[in-house]
Length: 422
Image 1 (cartoon, rainbow, N blue to C red):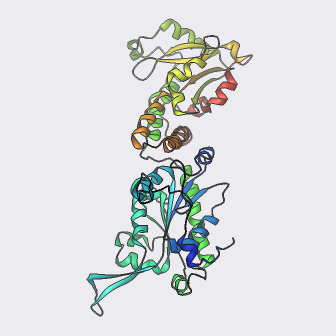
Image 2: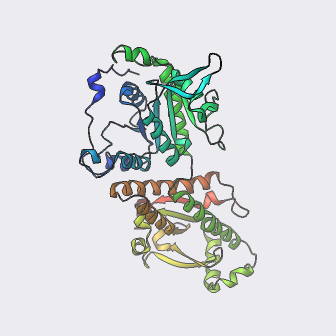
Image 3: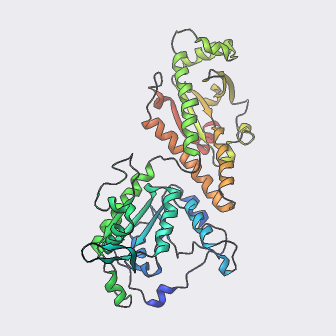
C-alpha cells in the first residue's frame, strides 16, 4: 500500500472543490453502485495525509469513500449558498452508510476544575479538534454506533481517558460490535502516530506508522464488510415493512398452501373470509397436480413501481388468473401465471408485488426536501427491503407449517419478472 505524500501548509489550507449542483456528489454513480458501502471521512484539515491514507486502503471496486474536502459540500450561506454547514452535515448522514472520524492530538485542553491528585495540578491532554468530535456525535446519533468509527492516534488516549470519558471503557476492549451483537458498541481503532513530529516538521513527514495504521484500517474495513451484509433498523421503514410483509403475507401464504396440500378440512376461520370455496377447491386440485408451487416476490425498479397503477397493467388477463386465497384475517388476491404462459412446465407460479413499499415514499419525502437525496434513499430502501426479505428467508425463525418456505418463495427483480412472463 503506497503512503500519502507529505503535505505542505499551503496544500492543507485548500482551496477545496465545491459541489456545484445538487446535494449528492456523483449521484448517478452512487445509485449505480448501490450495493457497495459508502463512507464519509471526517477530520481536521491538518489530518489530510491520514484521511488520504485511509481512503487508499478501501478499494474503489468494493467501497465508495468521500473525504469531507472531496467536493461533497456545496456553497454554504457564508459563500452565497442557501444551506449552512450544519445542514450539509445532516444531509451527509442521509447519504452515507458509514462514517469514519480521525482523532489526532492537535490541540491542548487544560481543565479549570479537575486536578491531578499527585501534584494538585490542573489536568491537561492533547485533544482532537472540537468540531471533529461534534461531527462524530452527529453521525453517531443519526446512523448509529455500528456505522460510526473512530480511527485515533494513540497519543489521544489521555484525551479519551481524562475528558472524553464516555468512551473510556471502550479503549482496552478489543471486541467489536460484530462479536457482541446486543451491545451498543462504540468502535475505537488505535494506531501509532507521529503527529507532534509531523507538526514540528512543518507537515513534511508522515504522521503515522504505516504498519500500525494499515492494521487498524483493515479492522474497520472488515467490520464494514460484515456489517453491510447484516440487517438493521434505521430511520427509514424498509426493514420494518419487509418484516411485516414477511410475517403477515409470506408466512401465511406458505402455511395455508401446505394445508391445501393435505386432506384436512378448511379451518373454520376461512369461512369468515368471504372466499369463493368452489374456486378454492379448483386451486387445491391444481396445487396437488403441480410439479412445484412457487411464490415469486417481485421487487420493482423504483418505489413508485410498487403502486398498483404502475404494475397492474403488466398482469394481463391473457397471462394471469386471479386467485382468492385465505389470508391471515381476510382473503387476499393473488395472480397465478396461466399454463399457456408457462409453456410445458408443470410448475404453478404465483407473483406478488409488495405494495407496502409505498410507505417509504412518504417517509423519505418527510425526511428531506432534496430531490437527489430522495432519489438515492429510494434506491437504498428497495435494496434494504429485498435484503431484509432474503435475510428472513435464509435465517429467520420459521413458524410451524412453514419449514419448507425457502423452497417455495423467491425474490426476483422486475426485469426477471418481465423475462418470465412476456
